[in-house]
Image 1 (cartoon, rainbow, N blue to C red):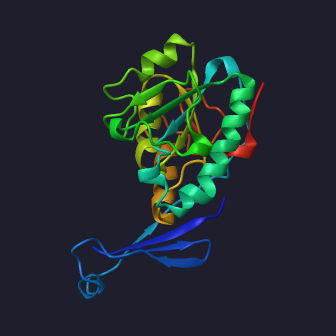
Image 2: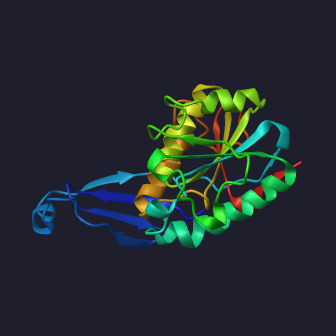
Amino acid sequence: MTLIRTVLLTSGLVLTVYGGVAIAQSSAPGTSSSAAASKPLLTLQMPALPDPVRVVLKPATTALLVFDMVDPICKAQPKCTGVMVPAIASLLAQARKAGVLVVYSTRAPNISKWLPEVAPAPGDPVVASYAQDRFYNTDLDKTLKAKGITTVILTGWKVSGSVVYTSVGATLRDYTVVVPVDASLAATDYEVAIGLFQILTQNSANATNEPLKAKASTLSRADMITFQ
């Protein structure tokens, strides 16, 4: 995976050095660029993220979760349509062939607006969400435990939102988590870096990305996940 080396912050400007290329993010809403430029820079060193790893999962005890792959959210995000949709579609095809449980989640107003390439199949559970953590105030945990699920693959929009928070909710409930890095992104490289870092260093940490560390999160990739 590309190394994330340095993050420079002001109150309104974020400059990320990502694999040697500087990417300037926009100023915070309501903050002028000149005002932001007058603030002293804060330089933060961030550990390099470990590479994604191959994992082999048991179909009977694994569930693939798909979050917010709906027209109002994904359609306006190039990374969602250009990278995530193909990655999730590939995972869905493999998971369905292996008999893996597939569960969808989004807010109630979007429940019928799934992108056709990654839409639910008849019989797939669909959970209306109330928070970024899809376990919060829903029957998701009950649904998974009723099927004997112990491992969850988290995909969807976005890595620094629902995926990172649900990874915490999952590990708190003793699930082992897999996050394919190409199947959950965000609008900026900064958000992606922070999201992946948080996933590996949350309450059940796996900072070295040990494959399938029990009750923790592993970073993988769609083409590095197999079922058998």
